[in-house]
Every structure is written in structure tokens, then in C-alpha cells.
Length: 159
Image 1 (spheres, rainbow, N blue to C red):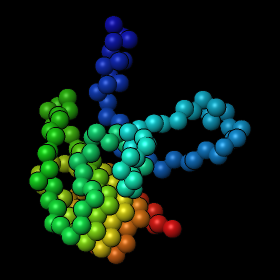
Image 2 (cartoon, rainbow, N blue to C red; image 1 turned 90 degrees about the vertical axis):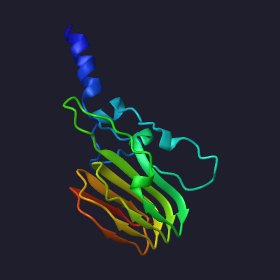
Image 3 (cartoon, rainbow, N blue to C red; image 1 turned 45 degrees about the vertical axis):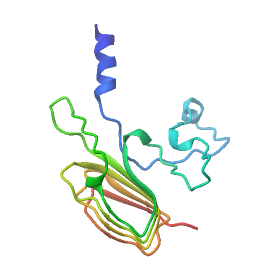
């Protein structure tokens, strides 16, 4: 009975959205590195289209996303909004991925709660983001304007 309870808890407890973690070096003699297994996600699979791909370690099936767009006005209300609820009946926060956008205006203000925003490879875009319960992660963005509020911001400039 307690085993079944533990399994049910494991399924229902939300996964951590984001945290800074140290990277292990190859050949590290740390005892924890020998027990750590690599994380594989759909984002790490080969990319047949040849377009830049996301390298996020978050489950890609949980994202609402805009990708590979140019010169458009993008509104989160135009996406299919998955509405899953927690054990108390509240709508769970959703993550958003914005990838490979150029000269776009992105409006994420909507009534659905947002957990984290993953932004990669944006050029000359304007982003309007409502308060986010998690983090906003920016990778390789050029000439963008971002208006928003969040718990944490991570910025990683391109080379």
C-alpha cells in the first residue's frame, strides 16, 4: 500500500522547472558523477529539418510554442491552450517556447498561468510577457525588447 502511495505521489508532484546546476567535466573523479545518468529529452533528438533546435532539458510536449516565424504578430490566445488541473482543481502553469523568430511582436498576456518562458534565437522582436511564476531564459537574442515580470531571468548571449 505504501509503495502504491509513493508511486502516485511521484506521478502527481510537479517537476522542477528550472535551476542552475554545475556541469560535470569528462573524467571527473567525483563520486556523484559515476551515478549520474545523462538526461535525454525529445529536444535532444536529431533534427532532420536542419533548423536550429532547442536544447532545453524540459519535456517539450508540455510547451506552448511559436517557432520559425518572421514579421508576424503572435498572440498566445491563438494557440491551443492545454488546460490541465492540479489536485486542488487549479489550472497548472504552462511553459512557453519562443524559437527562431525575426521581426515579430509576441503578446503572451492571457488568462492562463505561465510557468517559464524559454526564448532562443530571436532577432529584433518585441515581447510582452505577463507575470511568470518561474523563470525567463534567454539564449542568443539580438535587438529585442522584453517587457515582463518573473521570478528569475537567465541570459546567455550567443558567440
